[in-house]
Image (cartoon, rainbow, N blue to C red; front, side):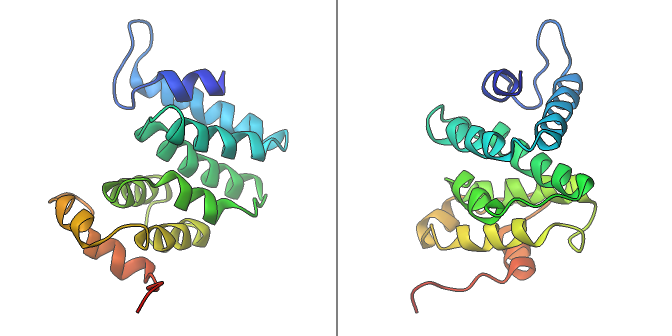
Length: 157
């Protein structure tokens, strides 16, 4: 069910039978069940599969943030969360999308898990000046806001 929700749902769009809010609640419920069953690798691989193989942009971001939220709620750790966050971000604008959703879920920048912050910081090195200029848009969260919060380190000086 988690796979079906991830690859067939457009975030923010209701289907004929269910509203968008209902679909996200179901996703959260299934993520909680997967974490409770220690199926963390399944959730991580699903997020990577949905982003890279299925070319879905928003649902893998939602899945990763809800996964981190559920890990925190259940007091569990997943060693590869940082790398998972970095791998899901394939376009420069997804940096702000992911961090914006994380702020919505966790409430404030101080409550966002360090693994998400570090994964987002790692993702900054994937893109160049052109990508940041292309996707620098006015929104609730801008590149400069995320840059000030996560403090990425340059891989090349």
